Length: 107
Image: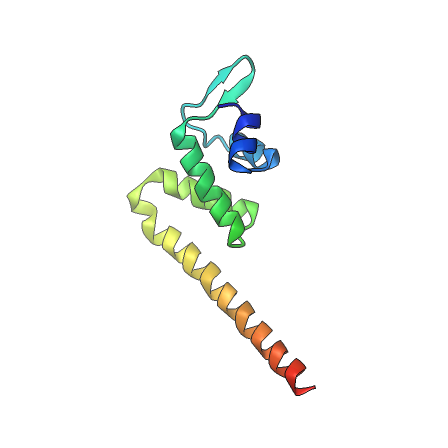
C-alpha cells in the first residue's frame, strides 16, 4: 500500500506518514517505484502512533515511545511511565476545567 493509499484508507495525514518514514521505524518497508509500501505491521505501528497523537503526545514523545516499543519488552516500564505521566497531565487538565465550570456556575 502506498503512502497516499494508507493516508486515504486509514485517514492518517500524509505529514504523519512522512514523519513516520523519517524516523526510520518502517522496518522492512520496501520502496517500489519511489514510493513506500506499507504492510500490516507498519499499519499497526501507525495505529499506535495515531493513538499517541490523539492522547496528546508531542512528536518527540511519540518517536521516543515508538523506539522504546520497538526495542521490546525490556522497555515496558519506561513506556508505562510515559503513559502514566500523560494520564496524570490529562487528569490535571480535567480538574482545572471542572474548577472553571464551578466558577462559571457561581457567576
